[in-house]
Amino acid sequence: MEPNRTLPRVAADGPLDATVTGLLADRVELLPWEATDGAMGAVDGLYTYGHPTVDAAMLDRLPGLRVVSNYGVGVDHIDVAAASARGIPVGNTPGVLDGATADMGFALLLASARRLVEGDRYARSAAFTRYDPGYMLGREVHGSTLGIVGMGRIGEKIARRALGFDMTVLYHNRRRRPDIEQTLGIAYAGFDELLAASDFVVLCVPLTETTRGLINAARLNRMKPSAVLVNIARGPVVVTDDLLDALRSGTIAAAGLDVTDPEPLPRDHPLLGLENVVISPHLGSATDRTRLRMAEGSVANLMAGLAGRPLPCPVAAPPPGPE
Figure 1 (tube, one colour):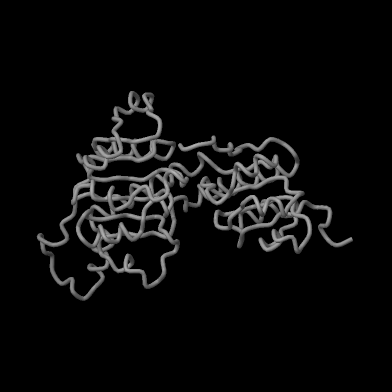
Figure 2 (cartoon, rainbow, N blue to C red):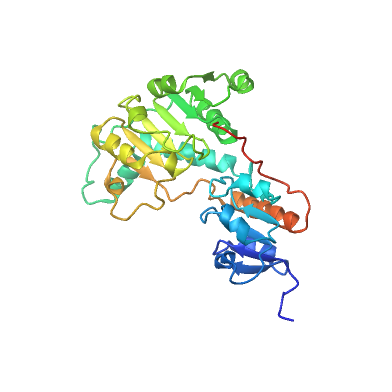
């Protein structure tokens, strides 16, 4: 018998994090993602970081599949409804990365407002020879108005951080959150109202057919010319070409992006050459403590599904119809 033949077979979207590899050692037989084409035999589980598409056609090629485990929260790359229809549970890692992602959102907000990356480049250059009180004037964060689009766990944590900066907080969500309004003293606003009133807009929505292209030219035009847009959601929530035009023309002042569409951007993409945009390489959950918890949670989901037990963090199939 070949080694590890009796272990469950898991196709992984690699390379795997070293912590994940350690947690799975001697518990599963890891296969490359190419095993999902059926060429390498049965696959019992899928472990994904969020890039390959897990659709109905793939699920039909894997009749022995018992579980799909995602390292992270976003499952827009997984057809959860198709998996549910086939009795295949899908797991993710909610909760553990909310604080780190909210920190990243606020870091991008501050960096964009105060032109931090631009200033860092200038401070390192030969051009910086004396202090000039008139250069690189930014925008004050404290006392300004923040609009949060999507009041889930991450949106709530963004709001709590904003209150520490004495910001007025507006939010828009598909459902009002009277509990959050009362607890935090924040206000619900219609989408257009939020865009027009906010000095900073932070996107915290999942990627769905409803939110794809949510921020387009028309909505950017509703924002203040002095406003800053921060995207910690998913790249396709923003129409990239429309954002590029808005930043070039002064329709909005600046943007902070942890995600882009496509991701990564082509190395010659004009967005990369603009001074009024700060771009990070999808670092929202990239802290040592959060990544450890994500590894532990995603492996727990995987092993539970392989054993036929309920997943600690299952993803529910979306309801039919628009959000």
